[in-house]
Amino acid sequence: MKIKPAYFIPAIVWFIIANILFLMPGPDVPSVSFLDIIYFDKWVHAGLFCGLTILIAYPFIKAGYFSKRLLTKIAIACALYGVLIEFLQKYVAFERDFDVFDMLADAIGCVIGYFAANRLYRWITEKNKPL
Image 1 (cartoon, rainbow, N blue to C red):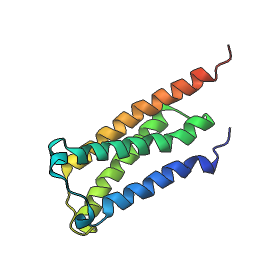
Image 2 (spheres, one colour):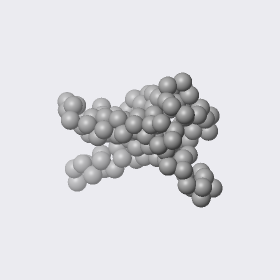
Image 3 (cartoon, rainbow, N blue to C red):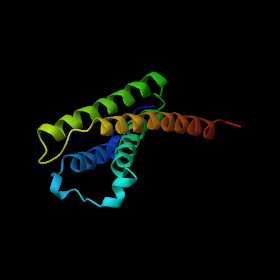
Image 4 (cartoon, one colour):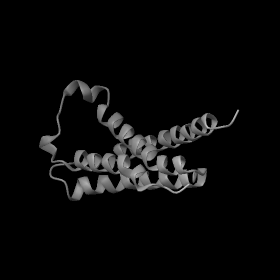
């Protein structure tokens, strides 16, 4: 089956929203002290990168071009994007900081996204098996 470009729309929208959030000026980022206690920022990073990994993998899963090798490449590319974002926050974004732990949270999100996309593939193929 051919990969339809429309399948990439959710990933593109997610990517754009994530970039806006990651690169918005520091003073515009809400700061609530109790959220610092539960490391809310790290959970957001992990969630955004988990979602990005799944959404980029989905068109390939849907079209039947799925492989663990491809999924690994997607997860690594997303993790490298997380590293790039931290450098952009340091050198481009206004009053934003470079944080190695954000990169770690991004990578953890990509790993979770890897396993979730793999599970999604298994679920879709089991659902579509003839009885």
